[in-house]
Length: 281
Image 1 (cartoon, rainbow, N blue to C red):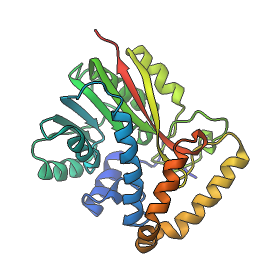
Image 2 (image 1 turned 180 degrees about the vertical axis):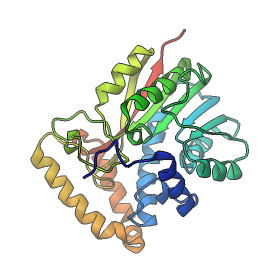
Image 3 (image 1 turned 90 degrees about the vertical axis):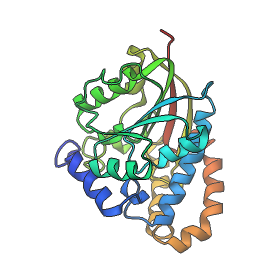
Image 4 (image 1 turned 90 degrees about the horizontal axis):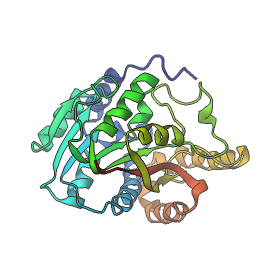
């Protein structure tokens, strides 16, 4: 394993991925697995996104999407709230922003590094701010805090922040070891997010599993044994079914049914959507 904070140059890394995959979910998903697998994973997560957004009391008009990537989540929001919503998308990759704005010229696309942008750049401008698997890829702690504060400051009073991350909250996770995992990932404790966002006037009001270890890799468990058992099954699935477009297509309905059941079991989560609301000003 390599240290998570070294040998990772974010702008180069993401530009290369988007240049290679050109809008495909492989640019932002599991590029070593099949297209059908990535579609399955994002379908599961999109269902969870609908669940988390159902807890928002009003339809947002202005939206800031941090780490906009291929625009998959932009499309989900257009489908949920209509094309009249005003979306600003920020991404480290100029390639991603260029391709997204070509497809959606109505979007205000901005190339920027969330880790170094001024935290007040969008001060209280948005009804809804989203960050889907974004902070995971900010491996430098100073830049992570800057990015999280930027997200928080961008929410208007009474607005909401949606974060999807592989939050840690259970007893055991190998990701707590500093040298575990890919060098472009850093998995963090849920309490770190809650504590920092509390200082910015945001409180968690709802959470829901984004996907489970049936469809994504396990992150944590209540014991080492539980984690090992989940990881054995995940390794088998990713080495067999998830490599094949045909096998994934044949298994999709069963996998989604099992995934849906497992989302109701807290030990099965591989990532969580959390909805935060900002106090009225």
